[in-house]
Each structure stands twice: as structure tokens, then as C-alpha cells.
Image (cartoon, rainbow, N blue to C red):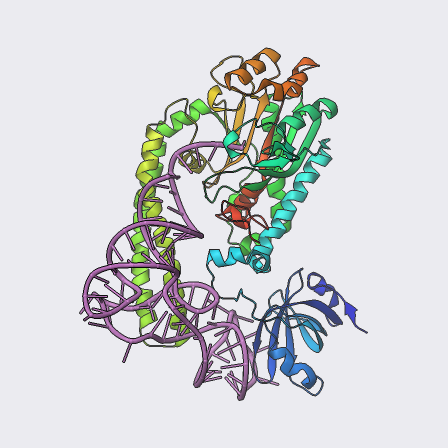
Length: 501
RNA sequence: UCCCCGAUAGCUCAAUUGGCAGAGCGAGCGGCUGUUAACCGCUAGGUUGUAGGUUCGAGUCCUACUCGGGGAGCCA
């Protein structure tokens, strides 16, 4: 009697016969024995077909089965340390559902352009599969955290009437003849909602027409934005800190093995504990001017120079292997390693070229300017836990941020910089609750007051101190997984010049 | 918008000083009873991104363009 099950449940079926349904991940076959690595969406399992009286009917069909063909296999489950996942199925029957033809993504290296063009197939690969599962857990933990802590979900509109902030990064859409914009944030709308429910959050896609192509930007990304009535800046920081710890702990609990597979430094994640560092923008500026910043970059300079020369030696050695005598596969492996080492070297050389610029930018940083990407990197790398940078100059920040009542040059806002040079993953603030101050900011920024009348209403009818923040999902997933580029942190990334598939 | 790098077989990459366009993977055929990106043998596979130019001769040199990668600036 056969039982249908999935690979993640095989431990309960050792010594029993089960049927798995999935896809061929890879095959290795000889004349009398074939190994099928089957994936079924829950994991990988090695299925072994030995040529015998019972299996001659399908043995030849199975051993030539192309990658990603879909099939059902029935067989006896056993524990086997040699097999991926630790369990093995000795096949007694196979039913091919569909024979795939020339699956483009082979188990060999591919270029990023090719992979991105085949994103719909690429995420069947193990690495992408791991990242997407971790993303799902991150989102699940986000919802759980807010739902369990008394927050009400409020969905904010995607079609937004007003430009609001950062008008140059808006996508305009034709709304029955009227121009509207794809939402860059749901924040103004959750501010209204928190006056109804006290603690609320929105979670959804946001759109920014960033002109640049960088590893840190997408044109479509997901954001969680909690908003709390009767909250001070410190209250909001406490929430952000507790929330981030909760997400990191959950991923560590549920995905430790996957993080290891992704090559993530687990100890660095374990170190994400309360309290995070808190410093003001002015203190951050001092840090950039300090000898610590100079030392960090000088160390980088010598270290990267050493790494580059070491890589150069390694490349020469590998090239000698690749071009010399010996087994073909050894030469191929060496050639592949040469390509990898060259890419790494090019990256390091680029970084090396940028160090003097970064040093100059940090040393000449002037109070009043926004922190640049390299400045954020320096600050985050000087700390092993996340860093809150608070109280930025008023006029480089958005109109709705609350003026510091003790120092009207700055606002009560914050950015959270993730460690290891990842940079900003959260931006938030206390919101200006005073009608006159808010109106003055709207006028100073030259925003159309009529578009914000509904927002000003919130300051006319029972205005209270309140605040919140936005966390970028992709940046968080990229940080936790230790991946360099946001494009791998979302199933279908949207970037400048990229919208297929 | 600026700087750097790249574009050669379906994929990843070679090609010496400007001198016959090649290998691995993948595909097809054959072999192999414990493989781990399996391995071994054979076969097929090319308008070298586009348009010009220099030259006896251009994948290689020059100009423009297109696309991609990395970085800067800009930016939630």
C-alpha cells in the first residue's frame, strides 16, 4: 500500500513505501544504476533506480530523463548519509508527468543577465528557493509581530493623488484622464488611521522611479509601516528595536540550515540583540570626522591591497593548472575558479579605487548635508549591532517630521543602519502634530496645500504626538540572508530597464 | 548624468604581436552497479551585438550606436 507524501516528511516513513511527486533536479546514471535528485517544493531527495527485473520497463526512460521533467516516483524510504537531505528512496515505479526539453538553467555557472531573463525558472534553484522561503518567514513574522501586539492592519491606496515627497521618483498613471501616482509610501494614510485605532500598520508594495541602477534600489518594493498614536520618538525607536530582534530571532529559529547553505555568518546574526546603538546625526558627523573612520578606511586600504595581490597569485597558479596537462575536469574547475577570482579581484579593485573618495567624503562631511551611502557604510561598520541615527537637519528631511522643540534646526527622525555595511533598512520619525508648524513646512517646501487639506485635518481634530517608520522588506531579507543585491530578495524584481518576466 | 569593464556556439568562457574561430557544459548516440556540478568515447552546433572605417588580411585596431555588469551622483 503506497502513501503519498512530501520530501519534508520522509523522516516519518523510513522502511515504508511512499510516492513522491516533483521535478527532476539532476540525474547521474550508469549502465545499471541511476540517481535521480528529485525536488518537490519541500526539499530535495535522492531516488535510486537499480536495473532489475521489476525496473527494466522504465529504467532506460528514467536514466535519460531531462532536468526539470515532472514525475511521480514510488519507492522504499531509507536513511542514507550519502544522499542529499539524509534520506533516499529506492524506486520501484516511476510515472513521468511531462518530459522537459532543454531546461536553460543547468547546474553550471550562468551570467546574471541570463538568469534575470529566466527569473521564472531561476527560482527553482536551491539558493533562490532558500531566499524565497526566508522572505516568506520574514513577512509572516512581521504580520505576527504587529497582530500579536495590538496593531490593526489598514490597507492604504496604491493610487495616490498627491506628489508629496520626492516628486522626481513618482510613477504617473492615467486615472480616467486625471494624473495620479503609484504610492511611494502609505504613511500619511496610516497616520490618519492611527487616530482611529491607536496602533496600526500597512504592508504592501511601493513604487519609486529611481533613475539609478544600484544593488540597493528597486522600482517596486514592499514596505511595512507601523504608526502609533501618543508615541514619542523614543517609543518608536523601542518598537523598531524589539521588532527587528523578533524577525531575526524567528529566521534563526526556522531557517538556520538554510542560512548556513547561503553562506551567512550566523554569529553576526546572533549578535543582533537589544539594545541597538543610538546616536544623533551630529554625533554621526563627528564620528565621520574622527580617527576611527580614518583608521577603518586605512585598514581597508592595506587589507584590500593585500587581498588583491594574493588573488593575483592565486589566479596565476590556477591559470597554470587550466592550461597545463592533467585531467580535463581539473582544468575546467581551475578555469571556472579563475573567472570567479577575476571577478572578485575586479570588485576589490573598484572598492580600492573608491576608498580615497569615501575618505574624503567622510573627512569633509559638513553638518547639514545628508549622509551618503559610503558614510552610512562607515557608521554601520564601526558597530556590530544596528545603529539608530536620529535628529537630522530639518531641511533635508520630509515636511511631516516633528521639529525638535529644543533645537529647531533638527527633526525627530531616525534611520536604522544594519551592521556589516548593509546600510539603511528603516526610516522613521515622530510626526509634526502642531498645525501651524506643519503648515509652515508645507509652505516652505512649496507643496500644494489643497492636496494636503485632509492631512491637515488630522491636526485640527484632536491632534496628538504620534510616530512610526517604514521597513523595506527586500533590504531586510538581503541583510538577513547576506546577499549583495536586492534583485535576489524578491521573486520578480523590477528595476530600471527591467520588467521581464 | 558621469566613470570603469564587457558583448564570440543554447550556456560559461578561450583565441599569443592583426594571420586557419576553440574548449567545457547542455543537446544527440554509445559505455559504465553508489553517483554527489559523476565519469569516459563519438556527433552536431558560428553572419564573433549593430553600422561604418584602417589593413593584403580584423574576434583582435579606430569611430559611433545598442544592450548588459560594476561604481559614483541622485534618492526612501
